[in-house]
Length: 454
Image (cartoon, rainbow, N blue to C red; front, side, top):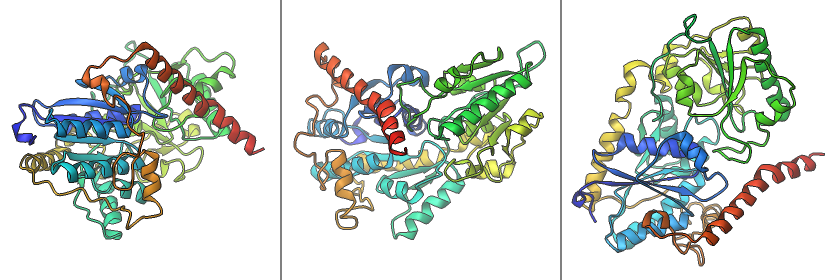
């Protein structure tokens, strides 16, 4: 059904983790035409968010279902075949390999039905590793969103460097920047608050994570007048975009009595930033949220300035510093030029950050409504990458032509949206299997890796 015939445009967001769900849902909101409805799909896998994580993100779509990728594609195909409110816009908030598989499945949908949705993808934060790999896996989407002018330049350079079309690259910003500007703590109002934004996999090693925890606890002891918060991404057993093998919660239990002014906290990052006077991190995207709100932000050099840590992204920002300097009272001051180039957009600049992307989305939706969208043409095909693409698609149970492999489809690929009730037995079996899988990834796999290094 052409988009122009819908009373309200329909959007689907497919995400594979809590952070990417936040990015995808907010991106859909930034790009959506007025009155659009949004359905959410959570890709079934290691990092599928729990109910607690979804509640913490605080973004609920009009409907929500957990699906394998083949099930998501089957739902889209059903909607087109039955003329049952097909989606006008699909936001792929996924890791690169899953984006590529979805693009091939959507390309097949367009070949079979002659129409397809507009497809948008991008990155949830700072792109500090696997730049070429991740970008080429996203090639083929109608819009590949860049979070800053610097990213847009880098993205286009990669595509043009391999002879791929770069017109899909569109400069925007991180969709979750916002909140009130920093309000310094006044005496008698609240204590000066230092927040350390933890990351699941940066740094990865026990010694490095222990160093950061000990320095944070030491900062609390050195400044009893301050409140020091360790902002955690997840609880043990939960997963986020990246795997956390050594949670800070476990390290903290071995530290004995903690200072009274030191606490471990969960919750929505925006709400935590409402009471933050100094944000400290290694390279978390929370630093960009903090800078956007003009909160003093410290990016640590304690473990070096290294690509593996991602803090090299902040070279030139004015934010790089160490715990020694923070203990002495140093407050970093961000460089305005760096902020402007890197998508932080403090003040009023953020209000227009999505104007170009919104206009391009509207133009693409008109083409979709007139059934004039061009075919999806990913850079990777069985001809250009015969030793890479088939295996990548097979991991998502798709054949090289984008069709589901035998046995790939869930009996009810999107039953949460279609109103079919799951039986208690099936739900319990799936829940137990998922819990066992997560336990293996979270506990058994790290143990095996450590034993292998002995």
